Length: 107
Length: 114
View 1 (cartoon, helix red, strand yellow):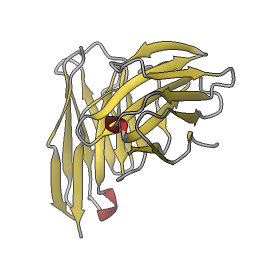
View 2 (cartoon, helix red, strand yellow):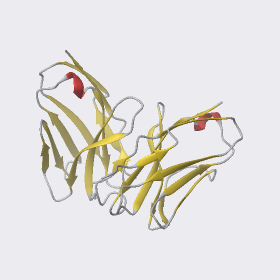
View 3 (spheres, chains in turn brown, cyan):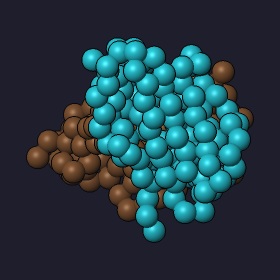
View 4 (cartoon, chains in turn purple, cyan):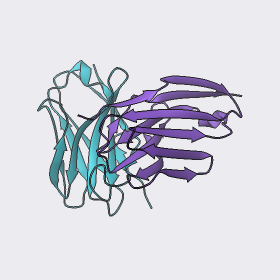
């Protein structure tokens, strides 16, 4: 059974800082991995999708990497802004979710 | 292109009642999956429908059921509501099946059971 872990559970940084969120999974036989953000009480917004054959994907200030052999993915956020404050979730394979990382970016 | 639409956005029901939630996927998407989100358990997978057939099912009691229509719209039904069913219910749609394609989520239905 796929287990997905996200570390840290919460993170608070000052505006402008670069940061890394981590996602680890136990079963490397996955088709893809997807990162989402969720604002309080809202649905999930897709950020990046990495296919199993890819190593990374980039969108604006976001970069996600995937290392299937080690069962890890990272989401890198450059020059963080207060508007980045949200919970970030990774979903692995058949949409097994981690518990998320709650990010707060302070002005 | 319209996103995933969930109705209603908010619901208050009494214990023992039943409820039906609706999800309209993005046009052209054939997969619809449902999730329950609570502060204690996080996001938990309920089931997935693809071309009107249930393909995957999570670990929930039989009180939770669903169906998908020929236009890919899906409904989820919860019978004999319990206080613990209070949650945000999310649906997601995709062109291919779960895990094989990018998933797009609706804004959710907030269900409160009193």
